[in-house]
Amino acid sequence: MRPSRNFPTLSRPVWLGLAVCAAIATGLGTFVVAQDSQKAQMAAYAKGPLVPLPPQPKGVPFPTDAWPRGEAPEAASRVIKTQFDQAFGNSKSPMGETRAVIIIQGGRIVAERYGTGFDEKSKLVSWSMAKSVTSSLVGIAMLDGKLKLDQPLNDPLWDDGDPRRDITIRQALHMSDGLRWREDGYADPVSNDAAKMLFGPGRENIVAYVTDRPTEFKPGEKWRYSSGTTNLISAAVARAVSPRNLKDPTGAEGYRNFMYDRLFRPIGMNNVAAEFDLAGNFYASSLMHATAQDWARFGLLHLRDGVWDGKRILPEGYVDFLRTPTTAEGAPGYGAHWWLSLPNKQGTLKNGPYDSFEAHGFQGQWIGVIPSKDLVIVRLGLMADESGWDTLDAWLQPIVDAFPTVTQP
Image (cartoon, rainbow, N blue to C red):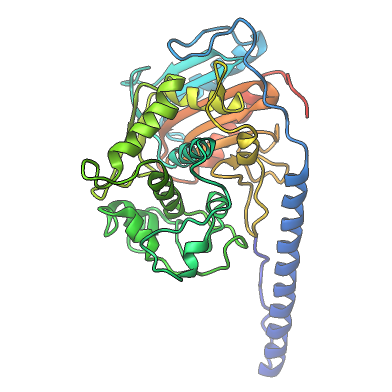
């Protein structure tokens, strides 16, 4: 995204100095124009119409108990077989080992396969797909009137008067909280904040680790992906829905009950394990385990506008908020804790459809929700290197392309 700055080599120092100054000035100007152009592009996407979220087809039950099953269109079935054989037959592919894939179309499972040693009962790790689950917990707390998007996080670990207390839940969901954070380079536990929070000095109290980060940008202005931000959001939800008391001094028990009673059990996610640290904080950024079918239920809830079998689980309009791109500077295609495939071709589906919103997780975990095709796809696996995402993206595209469009903007 940054322009190239290859400076010319001149024989005279004075001309070299002038050339360098000119190159820097030009580069900075190009960078500012590019950033302004990107913000304008995202603003246009944000104002554009959303593809309507399709209702559950008549006669197709919600999978609170068992999943209904159906057949993919013939042309799609051929593509699915080819792609499945490729994914499950080649663990040395850059996209790594594929452990489970489920395709839901029209509310029914139309394709499902598991890798060796895994089946429909296997609980598989979320990694950052848990972030999207956290956004749902925010929505449920909003439905109960216990949170609002524009209220501040107001974390009690920050002193009164600390400007960080004013970071809003909306800004945090958009990853534009402005806190200093380094998420890239997961293999480097020395400088990667996510690794240090989860497995290093922050592991016993992940929220305390995050609240120690200073402000780097004005909240709301710049996008920066941060697992720490998700854990701050989760802490705010926990304080709102699970008051501390002598029987539950950290609030963890109440928060866990809230998750299961208000989100997981109502939609049939009965094979879920959510992990907490020693201080009672949910590892909201990273650590949940669920079966592939349960992850598909989570995707279907969002495809159905947060309504499950006639009962509203998420506030009306909330899923539209989640899938609307943030206009914070630097955002490649990101909503509110959901990734987006947009016409800028920086998302998973480079060739569209551009209404797809997705939960992504480290090592190639992926839930895609595609309203225009009434489609949910879940892929779970073990990717050795982050460069494998390009291969995974290319593998997913033919599957999505093979299904007909059923809903237009």
